[in-house]
Each structure stands twice: as C-alpha cells, then as structure tokens.
Image (tube, rainbow, N blue to C red):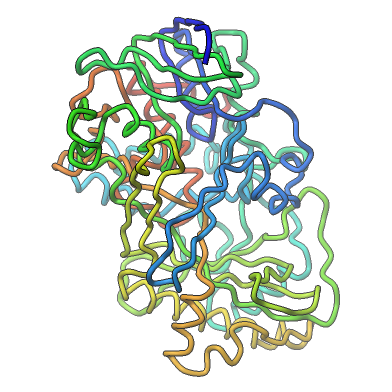
Length: 506
C-alpha cells in the first residue's frame, strides 16, 4: 500500500449491513457526524432488487462466500455460509423474512444479566422499526396481507391437515403455527436498511466509504480511537470519539482478533492488546435439511415475491416452552449437488431454530487469510433428534391430501433415505445446511465469557462497541435480521443517550 488518507468523524460505523445502516441513521438523527466504512460496493443490482433472484447472489461478487472448516458431524463437508459484501449487507442477499422472535428469547437475555433487553423493553424498539400493531408505518415497510401464490396456499393447507394450525400473525401474540411470511419489500423491490435508513441521509450527517477493506481498529492503550482500511491499494485511517463494529457474526469477531482483542493464548502472546477470551466463541446458527417433492404441474409465482412465502413454527417434542422448529417452504426444488430430480417441485426445508450445538471462529495461521469457522454443526445429539422430528413433520405435510391431490406431490428426498432412524440421521448429516443466521460470537453479558456489556461496550476497551447479531448471547427463535436491526436501534439509543425516532419516521 502506498500513501495514506485520514478522516475524522464523531462516530465511525464499520459495516453498512442490516445493523450498521440502521445505526448510522439513528446516530445521525441525533446530530452526530457519522462515517460508515463498508467492504462492498454501493450500486444498484437488479438481482438484489428482485425478491425472486436471491439464489443468484450466493457465491457472487456480492457474497463473502465463507466456508466452514470440515464438519465432523456432517460427513466432513465444508458448508457455505453466504454473507453480504455490499452496501445493505446480508439484508441484500437474504429472503427478506421479518421475524421478531419469541418474547421468551429476550426475557432469557435479560435473565443472563443483560438489563434493558427484556421483551417488554425491546418490543417498543421493534414497533419503531416495523410499525406492526401501532397503526403507523415504521421506517421499514413490512409486507403483510398479500395474495400468496397457489402452491403456498396448498402447503399451508397441507400443514393444517398434518395437525399444524394456521396462524395469521407469527409476530403477534402467538408464534406457533403455519403462516404466510412477512417481508421487507416495498413496491415489489427488496427493502434493505441501506435503502430505507441510510440512503436518505447520505451527505447529510453521514459519509459512506464503500469498497474499503477494514484491516484493524486503532488502539491507544485500552482505548479505540479509529479504524484503518485499504481501498484501491491506499491505506486510509479515520479517527473518532466512538467506533461501533457492525460487521456481523463472522466479520466482527475477526476484526477484533486482527486488532489484538481476543484470547491472548490463541492470538499469540505479544499480539494481544486486550485479553478477551470470548471473542469468536459461542458461535450459533440455525440449520436446514431439505424435504423435496416433485409435483405434476408447474407452480406460478407473482412478480415482487420470493419463491418462499410460507413457513411454520412448531415443537419437536411435547413440553417445550417455545417452538424449536421453523420449517421454511419453497415452491421450487432446491436440490443439493448430489441429488437429481425433475424441474417442478417443492422444498419443505426442515428447520431447527433453537440449536444446542456451539462453535467458534478463529484466525488462520496467517491472520489475513480466511478465518477458520467451525460451527460444530450437530455436535450436540439433541440437534440431530430435533431435525429428525422436523423432517418427519415435513414428510407428513408432503403426504397430506392437499399436496397429493391438488399437486400430485411425490416425495423424492429423503424418501427411502428415511426408512429408519439411523438412515435418516445419515441423510441429515449429508444434507444439513445453514439457515444463514450466524450469531453469538461477541456475546453480550456480565460473565467471564462475554465480549460486550449490556450497553454493547467491549469489555476492557473504551470507545468501542459492537452492535449486530454477534452480540446475541443466545440465538433467537426465528430469522435473525429483525433482531439484528433492533440491536442497532438499541445501540443508537445507548450511544446517543436518547430515545430515537418513533414509528412513522423515515
């Protein structure tokens, strides 16, 4: 690198994804000068805008395309973990599904010593974002009440025939049941926090630096004073009163470790500026296993909607206090590379959303190489049993009269690969894949394993916070995008010392 450019702001935000874009906006609303540094480009992409083209974005230049280390309990496969490398972050690559989570999730966070994070305290923040139940619009449009495509009407009807009741609003008083999804879509286009929050204020209190690979946080003793990045071969630095890392559950711990914040033994003695052993640990994710059926007529889809429009929340066994399963349904067959089948089909992806397995992220021997991501999928046998129950439920839905009679549905996978429990377990190990919800690697808490405190300040470092899915001490019951944005809004409240915009503000 040659040359050096310097910048100054009151607040630096690392990452312009779901959390970073929302945080930057709210801090700017409070009158602070904000600099946002993002690794990816800032440009319009037709495949991002079109809700039906999500799968085109995976392994594209807009995807970090992380791979795990070989997974011992998943036939030594290296699993693909798509993460957005673009202004908009993973909100630009995901299925746009809006799930607040279960109230018990946040009450559990509070019970771990995280004062201010109970459901009673975070529900108003969600309402500020989405406007649901308030009668007023939020900053993010959440699409509800649309006309689902016929195949999804049939899937929901089949779920009811299999014993899962219909639930009109899984973000309402009850989460359990089969539902049509709620989406962050506006005018048939994907609506990211970058588009809803960030773009309207660029140049008015917020400066965006795209295509900037952040290399490290700048520390003076135990205070973070800025950020260093590389753009077009030129080293650039920015200094600020406060730095907030919003690089996601993979990027945030990696940046901390590359800056000398983490487990001193793992980082190698003298390279550790701050010993914080929890950095990169507590990695959690939700998991999917495909149940695929052929159909005898081609499903049709409405413009402006994704191929997935229905899902359900259910419990793998009686007595569980909250749902642990969230199968997600696609009106197309999502074959794994080793699978074969006709072009017309449906995929009921058996989903586990309260996993017991925990993993970690470590730096490679060369810290600038890809990080070593080890979610240890299925390392806890309880996850295998819960996913087996989810697969069985999806098989019952495929076999229900509505899908069989209306669509001629015929199960292809697992099919005979589920004839016994042992065979089904082998199928799960062979086909399990991410639900795209990594979390927990900079966990919030007051114990020795925590990375940030309940105000999201990094333990032992002044002027530094983390605000994204990495701070979740326990992964929520459902898609993590909405909770990540809630965390960003809370972080803005904490950073500015004021309550930010109410529902209806834009």
